[in-house]
Length: 446
Image 1: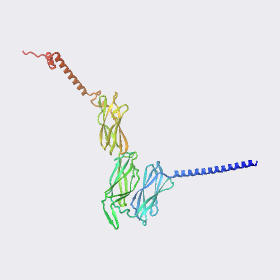
Image 2 (image 1 turned 180 degrees about the vertical axis):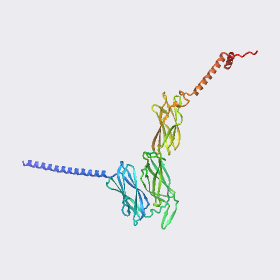
Image 3 (image 1 turned 30 degrees about the horizontal axis):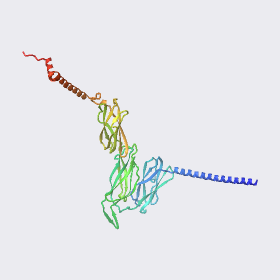
Image 4 (image 1 turned 135 degrees about the vertical axis):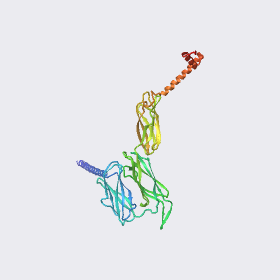
């Protein structure tokens, strides 16, 4: 009996330990689940998809005791629309900003879009020359502030030993003129226009190299610049050039016209900066197919000639013309043109097989081409009804009938001449004269 009691007691303790262990695991699991939910909630509540960039500062460097301007860009780099974005300059010594100018709120920021705002700050007159940190922060729907730190230079001229003269030597784009929906690159060529020389100032030697600290292209209008700013581009020797690429997107539905993008180049100091407008042309016109002649019959087939004209303001390439009409075969099936400059005209010639039935329909002429690296298609409807062509009767012209009739007459005359020579030993001409005299005898003179 005692032994049974001890065994029962042992089993009871084992069950109690197992229950405590199970409860401990359960509590830990609950706590872990709560922690995960908190983290997920915090992650979902955190505002994502905003990128803040300082794209311009004037003057550069900022000067003690003076006001300077910051041009700040906020971009939605996420995939959805972000609502109620507040952008704020969090100024601390040596910077200050009025409360009315420090904050800017935007209601909606769509995916891929950008907004801009100017902030005017003041530099304390006792500020130390050199780099200083400035914080710009944002929040979404009253959530947590997200802080980004930027460096603002204060004081005289930075890198004074690089005094080259930067100029914009050339601006090109691919494509030359954009169409709505296009993506392309704008190339800006910068040149150090200085001549190689050196000059001494005290115990410091100044050379005519040009230093580029940053370069950026931004758009305050409908166009979208997808490239980020370029930094620390180094030194350009006198007479040398550097070519900078910037990617641009033209949204669908953009109206035709000329748009101005702004190029900001920070040189050795604000005395050597560049700020210029860059023109971008948007032109939605493309290729048009125009019937150059009336369709003509060629036996049982129809020959169609179509003028292909480039109305676009830029050069296009890879042009292919494709005629289409259900149940009808065209030869060639495609007409390749290749490159077309503005206002170029080429004539595409097609033979249409009737297949025993008369053609009296309209064909779709599709022109496929590239504007830059963007594929486009333009379609024009063209009549290929050969019955409308003048001088056509059943596919054979009256001149053909005339030629056939003359040939028959000649063959008959030659045959008759040979027959009379053989049978009556008289030529055709003499035979005709003889018959004429027999029918119309001459009167005998009295």
